[in-house]
Length: 94
Image: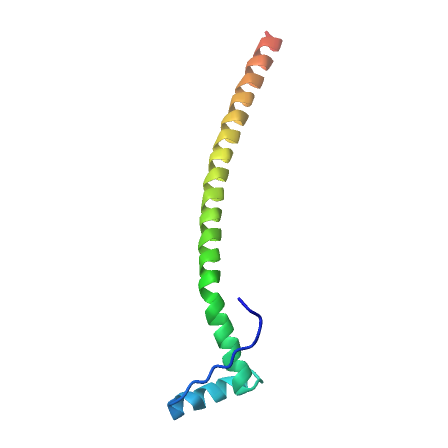
């Protein structure tokens, strides 16, 4: 994809819609053109961001499950070591 700028014109817009866009641009302290450019960029990048978010959510879910399994294994090892310690203490005191 080229980095050169391309002109986009949108004709036959509803006056109320344009007024709302102007109000939103004013609230954002920017021009209508800059506001719309920002919206276009966010919209164009939105799908990619949604896909990345889905991938991260999937990764977090997998890692959470792996950590849960790891935690269960660690608890089992700790319990086993505790039992061995008690057995050794019993042997020493006998």
